[in-house]
Structures are given as structure tokens and as C-alpha cells.
Image 1 (cartoon, each protein chain N blue to C red):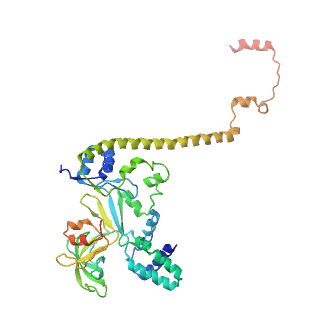
Image 2 (image 1 turned 90 degrees about the horizontal axis):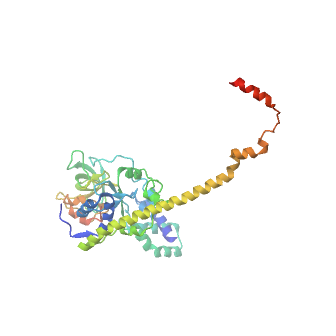
Image 3 (image 1 turned 135 degrees about the vertical axis):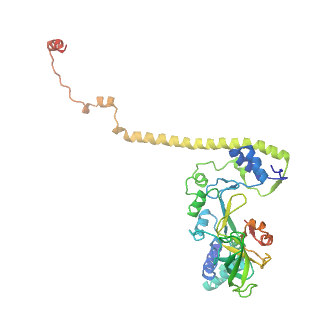
Length: 169
Length: 247
């Protein structure tokens, strides 16, 4: 009883307070039906495509930036994909972080909603577009990486990000 | 051919069973050499072979524990709950913590675009008739069997042992046969009950609807349906006269 009350309270609080998305899944969802329910808004009918100029990505490290906008993909004509490096401008940042708003930074795309083929021929896709900020040499600016990252980063020589990551998908 | 790996998955047993039932021995060795896993499709529970399908990684957890705690307390203060309830919640806090977790992700694997599309349409596999989940739920397939134990997911790798591998390969044939036999028995039993049911229904219908159908013999015996007999006297001479005329 108390547990359910607590979780309900926390849901109310979170939905009021924070701007974070897809946190409903934190609730005790055990069966498949509830997983489906929480899934409603996460996959839209939108056609997912490359990360190109003006794509806004979430920053999933503790560098201080929260959101960046892609201004250039360093590889590929159409844009960046999972594992590619982009140049971005910081749009939102924490008040006292390493990275300030308006700075131009480099970042590695660690999650992309557009599917990407794997070496064995299968495909992988994520539920959001996320980036980890790096310097020009490819070393991460932050010291932590949140959420899952793909193992393809090893081929791209971003082993540091892989070691910091919580999950490797 | 690449050299044989020194470490063999225990999961190899189940993998090999799966592969053998479809592709024969060559494919068993192939899968073993590549050390690939055969995953199950999230939607239809069929096997996803290496190089097939798509996997969708969903990041579930975003909120840290301290963040959650803060909100719970804030809401509690606002509501003004009693100390008793407060204590209860503190007591149950580890539970909430475990649930929220630091980072959770769920990986959905799909064997083909059909399953992926059904997932995107938010269909529930338990309600879609062609999935394994539906069939198991509705008693169409065998659900409990000791042969399924071989197919469990084991994350601990086993050291390569030649004898073990040999015995495994021997066992696969046997286990596969046992399972298929049991599955067919299950289906047979399932259909048997259906036959009894059908016969019962037919008997009931016969009893209820017999008045609609009457055999010709019964009609003949029923006096109310027969015309009253009228005796007509016919002289023998007349018939004899008529016969030559017909010729």
C-alpha cells in the first residue's frame, strides 16, 4: 500500500516538476500490457532520418550541456548516423557546468532513432537521439555517460565512452 | 573455416538444438564458431538468427534516486500526511529504490519486419493469434515440459570439453525427438477433447430436433398422416379386356 502510494506521489511530482521525458517506465511495470501502455508516446509515426543540420540532440554525459543542436556532420553527405561525430552548438546548459551555452562543441552520436545496420546484417535503433561531448582529439569532456550505448563505438575508436557507459547494447 | 574456439557456450546446447531442428549439423558448427546467440523474437517468440531482424533499444530509466526521494517528500509535505504513513514509506523505501534503479533499458528484438510493424502498431502479442504467446496462453501448445529446460538462457560460459560437446551433440537428437513427440501428443490430446465435445453437441441436437425429421417408415405408420382407405370394387373381366388393347 505504502509503496504504491509512494510511487504514485512520485509520478505526480515528476510529471509536474521535470521536463524529462519517458520516465513513466520507472513505475513498477511488470507485465507486458503495462509496458505497452508506457510506450504510447515514445515511438511516433515520424520517419526517422539522419542527424543533420539543426537536429537537436540530448547530451547524455555530465559535461554540463543538456541539449545541443547539430551544425555539421563530419562524415557522410546526408548526415550523421549512429557512432558518427558531429559539430554542435550548445543550446541548453546547466548553470555551473564545464560547457556553456552557445559554445561550439564536438560530439559522438551514441543513440540514434534511425536504424543502423550491424556487422552481422541485423539492425539496431534507439528511442532517442543522444550525444556525448568530446574534444577534438575524441576524448570525452564529461566523466560519466548515461544510458545504453552501442558496441559499434569500439570500431570508431571511442573506447573511453564504452568504458564509462552503464550499458552496452 | 575459422579455428574452433576454446570456450564453448553452455547455451550452445540449446542453440544447437534449435539450429539442428532447422538446418542440420553444418549450421550447428557454424553458429558455434561464430559464437552468436539465437535470440527470441519479442513479438512472436520465434528464433532470431544472426543477421536477421531488427533490435530496438529503449532507455527506460531517467530519474535518479535522490531526485525521486525529493519529490516524494515534497508531495508528502504538501499533503501533510501523518507520521505513521511517513514511517511506512521510509520502511518501504528500498523497494522503491530497487524499482527505480539507476539505469534500465529494454531491448526488443524482432525476427522480421512483420513483428516489428505489429510492435509499432502497439499490438499485444497475447491477443494476436499467430504468436507463440497467444498459443501458449490458450492451451494450443505445450507449455510445461522438461525438454524446455535445455533451452534456458545461461550467461555463464562453459569451458570447452571434447566429451561434453560430443555428448551434447548426441543428446540433441534424442531431446529433439522427445520434444517433438510430446508436442504431437499434446496436440492429439487437445483434439481428442474436441471430438468428445462435438459428439456431445451432436447428440443433444439430435434429441432436441428429432421431431423435425421423421423417417419414411415412421410416416407410414402414423395414421393421422395417411389417407383413409376406400374400398373400390373392380371387376376381373374389365382388366382382361383391356390387356389386348395395350398391345
